[in-house]
Length: 357
Image (cartoon, rainbow, N blue to C red):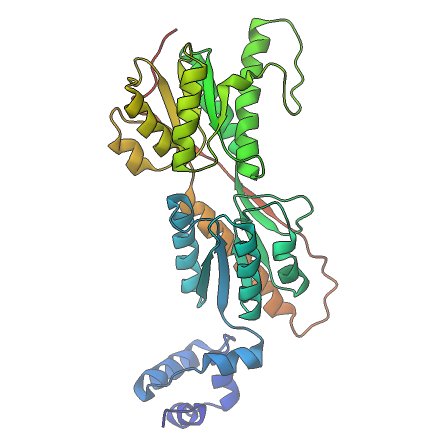
Protein backbone atom coordinates (compact mmCIF):
# COMPACT_ATOMS: atom_id res chain seq x y z
CA UNK A 1 0.00 0.00 0.00
CA UNK A 2 1.29 3.48 -0.94
CA UNK A 3 2.16 6.24 1.47
CA UNK A 4 -0.61 8.55 2.71
CA UNK A 5 -0.83 12.11 3.98
CA UNK A 6 -0.77 10.73 7.52
CA UNK A 7 2.58 9.07 6.78
CA UNK A 8 3.96 12.42 5.58
CA UNK A 9 2.58 14.07 8.75
CA UNK A 10 4.38 11.52 10.94
CA UNK A 11 7.60 11.92 8.94
CA UNK A 12 7.61 15.73 9.04
CA UNK A 13 5.85 16.46 12.33
CA UNK A 14 3.53 18.83 10.48
CA UNK A 15 -0.24 19.00 10.61
CA UNK A 16 -2.50 17.50 7.95
CA UNK A 17 -3.84 20.96 7.12
CA UNK A 18 -0.35 22.20 6.18
CA UNK A 19 0.35 19.13 4.05
CA UNK A 20 -3.04 19.39 2.35
CA UNK A 21 -2.42 23.06 1.59
CA UNK A 22 0.91 22.21 -0.05
CA UNK A 23 -0.54 19.37 -2.13
CA UNK A 24 -3.37 21.61 -3.37
CA UNK A 25 -1.07 24.41 -4.47
CA UNK A 26 -1.51 26.61 -1.40
CA UNK A 27 1.14 28.72 0.30
CA UNK A 28 3.26 27.11 3.02
CA UNK A 29 6.41 28.27 4.77
CA UNK A 30 9.63 27.54 2.94
CA UNK A 31 11.03 25.32 5.69
CA UNK A 32 7.78 23.32 5.75
CA UNK A 33 7.79 22.99 1.95
CA UNK A 34 11.30 21.52 2.08
CA UNK A 35 10.27 19.04 4.79
CA UNK A 36 7.20 17.93 2.84
CA UNK A 37 9.09 17.50 -0.43
CA UNK A 38 11.81 15.47 1.28
CA UNK A 39 9.17 13.23 2.88
CA UNK A 40 7.34 12.79 -0.44
CA UNK A 41 10.55 11.65 -2.10
CA UNK A 42 11.55 9.36 0.77
CA UNK A 43 8.12 7.73 1.09
CA UNK A 44 7.47 7.62 -2.69
CA UNK A 45 4.18 9.42 -2.14
CA UNK A 46 2.00 9.86 -5.23
CA UNK A 47 -0.74 12.49 -5.46
CA UNK A 48 -4.15 11.18 -6.47
CA UNK A 49 -4.90 13.81 -9.10
CA UNK A 50 -8.46 12.63 -9.62
CA UNK A 51 -9.29 12.93 -5.95
CA UNK A 52 -7.58 16.30 -5.71
CA UNK A 53 -9.48 17.53 -8.76
CA UNK A 54 -12.80 16.55 -7.23
CA UNK A 55 -11.94 18.35 -4.01
CA UNK A 56 -10.56 21.56 -5.54
CA UNK A 57 -12.71 21.56 -8.70
CA UNK A 58 -9.43 21.77 -10.61
CA UNK A 59 -7.79 19.20 -12.88
CA UNK A 60 -4.54 21.15 -13.45
CA UNK A 61 -5.11 20.51 -17.16
CA UNK A 62 -5.43 23.04 -19.97
CA UNK A 63 -7.22 22.25 -23.22
CA UNK A 64 -5.72 23.38 -26.53
CA UNK A 65 -7.54 23.29 -29.88
CA UNK A 66 -5.56 23.76 -33.08
CA UNK A 67 -6.62 23.99 -36.72
CA UNK A 68 -3.65 21.89 -37.92
CA UNK A 69 -1.17 20.14 -35.61
CA UNK A 70 1.30 19.61 -38.46
CA UNK A 71 1.45 23.36 -39.16
CA UNK A 72 4.87 24.59 -37.97
CA UNK A 73 3.47 28.00 -36.94
CA UNK A 74 0.93 26.42 -34.59
CA UNK A 75 3.30 23.75 -33.28
CA UNK A 76 5.96 26.32 -32.32
CA UNK A 77 3.35 28.40 -30.47
CA UNK A 78 1.98 25.40 -28.59
CA UNK A 79 5.45 24.18 -27.63
CA UNK A 80 6.15 27.55 -25.97
CA UNK A 81 2.74 27.64 -24.25
CA UNK A 82 3.05 24.04 -23.05
CA UNK A 83 6.52 24.63 -21.59
CA UNK A 84 5.29 27.59 -19.56
CA UNK A 85 2.14 25.83 -18.38
CA UNK A 86 4.13 22.77 -17.36
CA UNK A 87 6.46 24.93 -15.26
CA UNK A 88 3.34 26.02 -13.32
CA UNK A 89 2.19 22.46 -12.76
CA UNK A 90 -0.35 22.22 -15.60
CA UNK A 91 -0.63 19.42 -18.13
CA UNK A 92 -2.10 20.01 -21.59
CA UNK A 93 -4.66 18.14 -23.65
CA UNK A 94 -4.25 18.98 -27.35
CA UNK A 95 -6.96 18.47 -30.00
CA UNK A 96 -6.31 18.81 -33.75
CA UNK A 97 -9.54 19.75 -35.52
CA UNK A 98 -7.95 19.61 -39.00
CA UNK A 99 -9.52 22.94 -39.98
CA UNK A 100 -12.98 21.43 -39.68
CA UNK A 101 -15.61 23.44 -37.77
CA UNK A 102 -17.57 20.34 -36.74
CA UNK A 103 -14.42 18.66 -35.37
CA UNK A 104 -13.66 21.90 -33.56
CA UNK A 105 -17.06 21.88 -31.86
CA UNK A 106 -16.61 18.21 -30.92
CA UNK A 107 -13.14 18.96 -29.49
CA UNK A 108 -14.53 21.80 -27.36
CA UNK A 109 -17.28 19.54 -26.05
CA UNK A 110 -14.76 16.78 -25.31
CA UNK A 111 -12.50 19.14 -23.35
CA UNK A 112 -15.46 20.56 -21.45
CA UNK A 113 -16.44 17.06 -20.30
CA UNK A 114 -12.81 16.40 -19.33
CA UNK A 115 -13.15 19.37 -16.96
CA UNK A 116 -10.06 21.22 -18.18
CA UNK A 117 -9.36 24.39 -16.20
CA UNK A 118 -9.05 26.65 -19.25
CA UNK A 119 -8.82 26.72 -23.01
CA UNK A 120 -6.35 28.05 -25.57
CA UNK A 121 -7.57 27.89 -29.13
CA UNK A 122 -7.12 29.16 -32.68
CA UNK A 123 -10.67 29.02 -34.06
CA UNK A 124 -11.18 27.62 -37.54
CA UNK A 125 -14.55 29.24 -38.06
CA UNK A 126 -16.14 32.53 -37.15
CA UNK A 127 -18.64 31.16 -34.63
CA UNK A 128 -18.03 32.02 -31.00
CA UNK A 129 -20.45 29.31 -29.83
CA UNK A 130 -17.50 26.89 -29.91
CA UNK A 131 -16.03 28.43 -26.77
CA UNK A 132 -19.16 30.07 -25.33
CA UNK A 133 -19.89 27.16 -23.01
CA UNK A 134 -16.41 27.47 -21.52
CA UNK A 135 -16.98 31.12 -20.80
CA UNK A 136 -20.40 30.42 -19.27
CA UNK A 137 -18.91 27.74 -17.02
CA UNK A 138 -16.47 30.33 -15.65
CA UNK A 139 -13.39 28.85 -17.32
CA UNK A 140 -11.01 31.25 -19.05
CA UNK A 141 -10.50 31.17 -22.83
CA UNK A 142 -7.60 32.70 -24.75
CA UNK A 143 -7.68 33.01 -28.53
CA UNK A 144 -4.48 33.00 -30.57
CA UNK A 145 -4.13 34.54 -34.02
CA UNK A 146 -7.88 35.12 -34.24
CA UNK A 147 -10.34 37.77 -33.15
CA UNK A 148 -14.11 37.39 -33.07
CA UNK A 149 -16.86 39.96 -32.90
CA UNK A 150 -18.29 40.05 -29.35
CA UNK A 151 -16.17 37.04 -28.45
CA UNK A 152 -15.68 38.30 -24.87
CA UNK A 153 -12.36 36.56 -24.32
CA UNK A 154 -8.68 37.39 -24.33
CA UNK A 155 -6.68 37.41 -27.57
CA UNK A 156 -3.02 37.29 -28.54
CA UNK A 157 -2.53 38.84 -31.97
CA UNK A 158 0.18 40.12 -34.25
CA UNK A 159 -0.19 43.17 -36.47
CA UNK A 160 -1.09 41.25 -39.63
CA UNK A 161 -2.33 44.31 -41.47
CA UNK A 162 0.87 46.22 -40.77
CA UNK A 163 3.04 43.22 -41.68
CA UNK A 164 1.44 42.89 -45.12
CA UNK A 165 1.48 46.64 -45.69
CA UNK A 166 5.19 46.86 -44.89
CA UNK A 167 6.02 43.88 -47.11
CA UNK A 168 4.30 45.48 -50.11
CA UNK A 169 5.91 48.84 -49.35
CA UNK A 170 9.33 47.18 -49.50
CA UNK A 171 8.54 45.85 -52.95
CA UNK A 172 7.37 49.28 -54.08
CA UNK A 173 10.56 50.92 -52.83
CA UNK A 174 12.44 48.53 -55.11
CA UNK A 175 10.46 49.86 -58.07
CA UNK A 176 7.75 47.19 -58.32
CA UNK A 177 4.30 48.35 -59.39
CA UNK A 178 2.60 45.18 -60.62
CA UNK A 179 2.52 43.21 -57.36
CA UNK A 180 0.40 40.11 -56.87
CA UNK A 181 -0.79 38.59 -53.60
CA UNK A 182 -1.68 35.05 -52.66
CA UNK A 183 -4.45 35.47 -50.09
CA UNK A 184 -6.04 33.21 -47.47
CA UNK A 185 -9.68 32.22 -46.78
CA UNK A 186 -12.17 35.07 -46.35
CA UNK A 187 -13.54 33.55 -43.13
CA UNK A 188 -10.14 33.68 -41.38
CA UNK A 189 -9.34 36.85 -39.45
CA UNK A 190 -5.61 36.87 -40.25
CA UNK A 191 -6.25 36.39 -43.98
CA UNK A 192 -8.60 39.38 -44.08
CA UNK A 193 -6.15 41.56 -42.16
CA UNK A 194 -3.23 40.67 -44.43
CA UNK A 195 -5.25 41.33 -47.57
CA UNK A 196 -6.33 44.68 -46.14
CA UNK A 197 -2.67 45.56 -45.50
CA UNK A 198 -1.83 44.74 -49.13
CA UNK A 199 -4.73 46.85 -50.38
CA UNK A 200 -3.78 49.82 -48.19
CA UNK A 201 -0.22 49.74 -49.53
CA UNK A 202 -1.53 49.63 -53.12
CA UNK A 203 -3.85 52.53 -52.37
CA UNK A 204 -1.01 54.56 -50.86
CA UNK A 205 0.98 54.06 -54.03
CA UNK A 206 -2.00 55.04 -56.18
CA UNK A 207 -2.53 58.21 -54.15
CA UNK A 208 1.13 59.11 -54.51
CA UNK A 209 0.79 58.85 -58.29
CA UNK A 210 -2.60 60.47 -58.58
CA UNK A 211 -4.55 63.35 -57.05
CA UNK A 212 -7.70 61.26 -56.96
CA UNK A 213 -9.12 60.31 -53.58
CA UNK A 214 -9.54 56.68 -52.59
CA UNK A 215 -11.62 55.25 -49.80
CA UNK A 216 -9.30 53.49 -47.35
CA UNK A 217 -12.16 51.72 -45.60
CA UNK A 218 -12.84 48.18 -46.77
CA UNK A 219 -12.32 47.06 -50.34
CA UNK A 220 -11.24 49.55 -52.96
CA UNK A 221 -11.87 49.91 -56.67
CA UNK A 222 -8.16 50.50 -57.14
CA UNK A 223 -7.27 46.94 -56.22
CA UNK A 224 -6.80 44.94 -59.41
CA UNK A 225 -8.57 41.70 -58.54
CA UNK A 226 -6.53 39.86 -61.18
CA UNK A 227 -3.54 40.39 -58.89
CA UNK A 228 -5.26 38.53 -56.03
CA UNK A 229 -5.47 34.74 -55.88
CA UNK A 230 -6.83 32.66 -52.98
CA UNK A 231 -4.41 29.98 -51.79
CA UNK A 232 -6.65 28.73 -48.95
CA UNK A 233 -3.70 28.63 -46.49
CA UNK A 234 -2.54 25.29 -47.98
CA UNK A 235 0.48 24.10 -49.96
CA UNK A 236 -1.67 22.89 -52.86
CA UNK A 237 -3.67 26.12 -52.78
CA UNK A 238 -0.49 28.19 -52.85
CA UNK A 239 0.77 26.33 -55.92
CA UNK A 240 -2.54 26.71 -57.76
CA UNK A 241 -2.79 30.42 -56.88
CA UNK A 242 0.77 31.05 -58.06
CA UNK A 243 0.06 29.48 -61.46
CA UNK A 244 -3.14 31.54 -61.81
CA UNK A 245 -1.37 34.80 -60.98
CA UNK A 246 1.43 34.04 -63.43
CA UNK A 247 -0.97 33.14 -66.26
CA UNK A 248 -3.32 36.09 -65.64
CA UNK A 249 -0.56 38.67 -65.14
CA UNK A 250 2.38 38.14 -67.52
CA UNK A 251 3.69 41.63 -66.60
CA UNK A 252 3.65 40.95 -62.80
CA UNK A 253 7.13 41.61 -61.34
CA UNK A 254 6.58 40.66 -57.68
CA UNK A 255 4.36 38.56 -55.43
CA UNK A 256 3.59 38.65 -51.72
CA UNK A 257 2.56 35.27 -50.28
CA UNK A 258 0.66 35.64 -47.02
CA UNK A 259 1.30 32.42 -45.09
CA UNK A 260 3.88 29.66 -44.75
CA UNK A 261 2.08 26.73 -46.41
CA UNK A 262 1.15 28.88 -49.40
CA UNK A 263 4.76 30.08 -49.60
CA UNK A 264 5.96 26.48 -49.88
CA UNK A 265 3.38 25.68 -52.57
CA UNK A 266 4.07 28.87 -54.52
CA UNK A 267 7.83 28.24 -54.54
CA UNK A 268 7.26 24.69 -55.78
CA UNK A 269 5.12 26.06 -58.63
CA UNK A 270 7.66 28.78 -59.44
CA UNK A 271 10.28 26.04 -59.85
CA UNK A 272 7.93 23.96 -62.02
CA UNK A 273 7.18 26.97 -64.23
CA UNK A 274 10.90 27.67 -64.61
CA UNK A 275 10.58 31.22 -63.26
CA UNK A 276 13.87 32.73 -62.09
CA UNK A 277 13.80 34.46 -58.70
CA UNK A 278 14.43 37.38 -58.43
CA UNK A 279 15.42 38.05 -62.08
CA UNK A 280 11.92 37.38 -63.44
CA UNK A 281 9.86 37.53 -60.27
CA UNK A 282 10.55 38.98 -56.82
CA UNK A 283 9.06 37.09 -53.88
CA UNK A 284 8.25 37.88 -50.24
CA UNK A 285 6.93 34.96 -48.21
CA UNK A 286 5.62 34.41 -44.69
CA UNK A 287 7.19 32.57 -41.74
CA UNK A 288 9.59 29.63 -41.26
CA UNK A 289 13.21 30.72 -41.20
CA UNK A 290 14.45 27.20 -41.95
CA UNK A 291 12.52 26.98 -45.21
CA UNK A 292 13.54 30.52 -46.19
CA UNK A 293 17.22 29.59 -45.75
CA UNK A 294 16.84 26.30 -47.63
CA UNK A 295 15.41 27.93 -50.77
CA UNK A 296 17.81 29.19 -53.44
CA UNK A 297 17.99 32.14 -53.50
CA UNK A 298 17.20 32.71 -49.84
CA UNK A 299 13.68 34.01 -49.36
CA UNK A 300 12.81 37.40 -47.94
CA UNK A 301 10.07 36.72 -45.38
CA UNK A 302 7.78 38.21 -42.76
CA UNK A 303 8.36 36.45 -39.42
CA UNK A 304 6.04 36.05 -36.43
CA UNK A 305 7.24 35.78 -32.78
CA UNK A 306 5.84 32.27 -32.19
CA UNK A 307 7.53 31.77 -28.82
CA UNK A 308 6.26 35.12 -27.53
CA UNK A 309 2.75 34.34 -28.79
CA UNK A 310 2.66 31.00 -26.95
CA UNK A 311 4.05 32.45 -23.74
CA UNK A 312 1.65 35.41 -23.83
CA UNK A 313 -1.34 33.09 -24.25
CA UNK A 314 -0.22 30.86 -21.37
CA UNK A 315 0.43 33.85 -19.11
CA UNK A 316 -3.02 35.30 -19.82
CA UNK A 317 -4.64 32.01 -18.93
CA UNK A 318 -2.55 31.59 -15.78
CA UNK A 319 -3.40 35.12 -14.63
CA UNK A 320 -7.12 34.31 -14.83
CA UNK A 321 -6.65 31.04 -12.96
CA UNK A 322 -4.66 32.80 -10.22
CA UNK A 323 -7.31 35.53 -9.96
CA UNK A 324 -9.91 32.80 -9.59
CA UNK A 325 -7.91 31.23 -6.75
CA UNK A 326 -7.69 34.55 -4.91
CA UNK A 327 -11.43 35.22 -5.13
CA UNK A 328 -12.74 31.65 -4.79
CA UNK A 329 -13.59 32.05 -1.12
CA UNK A 330 -14.67 35.67 -1.35
CA UNK A 331 -17.58 37.57 -2.77
CA UNK A 332 -16.13 39.71 -5.54
CA UNK A 333 -17.69 42.70 -7.28
CA UNK A 334 -14.85 42.73 -9.80
CA UNK A 335 -16.05 43.25 -13.37
CA UNK A 336 -14.41 40.82 -15.76
CA UNK A 337 -12.50 42.55 -18.52
CA UNK A 338 -10.84 41.07 -21.55
CA UNK A 339 -7.35 41.79 -22.75
CA UNK A 340 -5.82 41.83 -26.22
CA UNK A 341 -2.06 41.55 -26.51
CA UNK A 342 -0.54 42.86 -29.74
CA UNK A 343 2.87 41.60 -30.82
CA UNK A 344 5.05 42.86 -33.66
CA UNK A 345 6.15 40.86 -36.66
CA UNK A 346 9.73 40.80 -37.90
CA UNK A 347 11.31 40.86 -41.33
CA UNK A 348 14.22 38.82 -42.62
CA UNK A 349 15.93 40.08 -45.75
CA UNK A 350 16.91 37.36 -48.18
CA UNK A 351 17.93 37.46 -51.84
CA UNK A 352 14.52 37.03 -53.46
CA UNK A 353 13.70 40.70 -54.17
CA UNK A 354 15.24 42.53 -57.13
CA UNK A 355 15.67 46.30 -57.35
CA UNK A 356 14.07 47.39 -60.64
CA UNK A 357 13.78 51.11 -59.85
